[in-house]
Every structure is written in C-alpha cells, then in structure tokens.
Image (cartoon, rainbow, N blue to C red):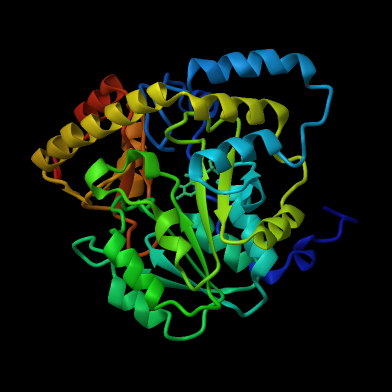
Length: 371
Ligand SMILES: Cc1ncc(COP(=O)(O)O)c(C=O)c1O
C-alpha cells in the first residue's frame, strides 16, 4: 500500500456505516463456492416458472437492435401500465428494478436529518437508501402475532416525517395490510408526508385479502407513490424492471432526474411489455405459489417451526437459533434460503416458494426444530 493514500477519508460517514446488502447467492457463485449443484434456490423470492414465453421471444427479437439506445422515456411500457391501471403515462415511471425507484425517490426528496418511518422487519433498501441520504429511519416493529402495528405507526407519524415507506405484503414478514388498516393509517399520516407503498408481491395476495391501493390513494391527502415490479410474479428478476405510479406527474419528473436516464435497457423494456400482456402465465405463477404456500406452511408447522402468515411467494419462520447457521447447513445440502440479518430477527429465515420439487428438497433437508 506504500504511496497509496487511504480511501477511508473519501467515503461519507453515512455510507461507511451501512452494512453490505444481504443479497441472495447467484447460482454460478454458489457452485464455485460450495462445489455443489443447487437443488433449491429459495433465497431471492424468484419465480420458479420463469417469465412468459412471450417475454423471452421479445428479448430474442430485440437483441438484434442493441446497438441503439433505448427510449429514455420508456413510453411504450408507461402507456401500457397507465392503460391497465386507469392512469396517465405522465404519472407512471419505469426503473431498473423497483429498487432503482426506491433510490430515486429518496434522492429526490430526502434532506439530511429528515425522518423516515417504516416497519421492522423490512426490505433492507427501504432503510439503507434513506440512511445513505442522511435521513433518520424509525422502524416500527410488527406485533408479536404479525398483525399490522397500526397504533404504533400512528404514534410514529405524530411527529413530522418526510416519508412513510413499507411493503405490503411485507418482505420479509409476509402479511398484507387490510384496506381498513390502510385507510386508517392514511388518515393519521400528515398531509406533507410522502407515502411510498411498495407492492412488489401484490400479485400473490389471495383475492379475498386484495384491495386496489390506487383507488384508496386517489382520495388521500398526502402525495404518494405505489411501487411494483416485474421481478417476482412476472419472472423477470434478471433483466431488472420495476415501475411506480405517482399521485402527481411532478413526482415522476423529479424521479426521472434522480434515476439513470437509460437505466431500463432495451431488452428489459420489451420483455416487461410482453410479460405484462400475458395474464394466463401470470395466473399459472400465482396459482402455484398460493397452493405451495398452503402445503409448505403445514409442513413447517408439523416440523415445529413458528411461521408468519404469508400473502406472498415466501415464508418467514423462526429457525429456533441463529438463522445463519441453519442457512449455512442447508447450503451444504444444495438448498439456498435467506437468513435474516436485522435485529431482533436474526433467528428468522425467509424461504421462497419454488417448484414443488424445490420445496420438497427444502423440507426434506430441514431438520425437525430443535434436533
Ligand atoms: C419489497 C420489495 N421491494 C422492492 C424490491 C426490489 O425489486 P426489484 O428491484 O427486483 O424490482 C424487492 C425485491 O426483493 C422487494 O422485496
């Protein structure tokens, strides 16, 4: 290192203090590290059926034109989403995954010292992206029975907050907020607070529990952004596309300045458009996840594990000890799940609903609790 200055003073304190992102392990890295074939990749909430065949055909066709930049305004996809959701293209934004949009929102609105209210446990980027902007993040825990902590959130919002952000259904916990709870939360949220409602797992919610957040938000006093993704039920995690629906075109215009102009590449744009149109494939995907989550929840309970209720394509369960140890033991059997690394949930792990074969492999490899 002689003659090379340390880079430490360059890095902003907020960034130096952030943990590394707890990402799932890509298959080629798993093979390289463990020298094994993966039997069940259940650590990233991916879709075991993959995308619509129409999306793959669209990628093949578009591959011939990759010398050209894509449309930076993403108009074709914005228009299709606007038509399907009953809004206008100017209030829709596309991102390089919805995580790109989470960052774009934070960069557009957060000032150092701002308060951001969220749930705990939560999707890490809801917290880290805000901390990176110098905001203070206040995390409201779910109740012990995994019911929605409405009163506690209302309390957190009794002090001015720039932003309220949470996912419903929740990653990693699984439950979804009800329409009644969501309306009650909005009525207790200050009119100046930006409400970011992350619906990455919306498609998996059972019909009886589902409500149209856009209809509820249409009457809200606050500015809002709903986030959705093509990475989960649409099976396009690898090409990176997510979208946001905003209460005002001005919010979209601001986020267009804080995201990368060409972040949504040409292949991603056409794949998302084709996947969005294939409702029959989407139905197959969500039917599989819903039936598997009933079967796997019963099997986990039979093995003695406490499991949070889920409206998603995954479960959060108490492993009974440090989850990192359980996940590591499973990796040596070719099974990938995600050990949670957020206090006080370090004994909890999240397991995705894969194919029946993957889920069986996971259940076979997981010991009865406490043995
Ligand atoms: C709640 C939630 N929001 C956003 C994302 C980001 O998804 P993507 O960037 O793949 O669209 C994820 C991914 O796991 C998630 O769980």
